[in-house]
Length: 211
Image: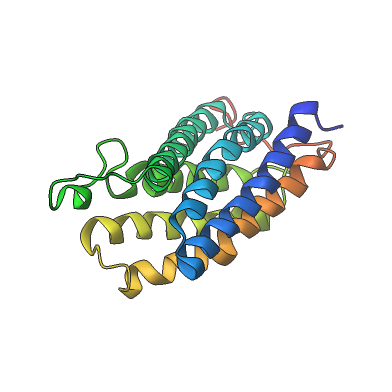
């Protein structure tokens, strides 16, 4: 079965998300440039929208309800990522001149400690990964890589929520692994898979009538 035009578009967006995610990690960890990492984080969230919808389009035949759940978590996470990046970008372009002491240390009301950027993204990705491993529309290994990325996202959120110190291994290890390797590789592979022709047969989960 040929891929739809949106699969092709979503594939390109997933590849761009991989590039943006990797450049975000480089800008944040190595360059420590707020303008650049805010820009790439914003782009990552925007690119992820189309990629996630394309994945939903492919896995919904496996289980429509879980696919919708994954899509909702994923889209909220992508929106949170773009908003988080956009907030940092606005501060980088026009730095605040008079801010009360300690105000900048307060968590964001929209994305507190990365609840959406890391927490919701991780949950949505975990469900998508589970669906990917149960369909012939994607390589199963891609789903296992998605599991790993999802777990690292959730650990990162919990680390930012509880530990706060970015030098702590609980935060540093997920940042390095997911930012430089796992997440960009997942999105890159996802983009390539979306641009390929779909498998002729798709493994269906057992329905209520079959159990």
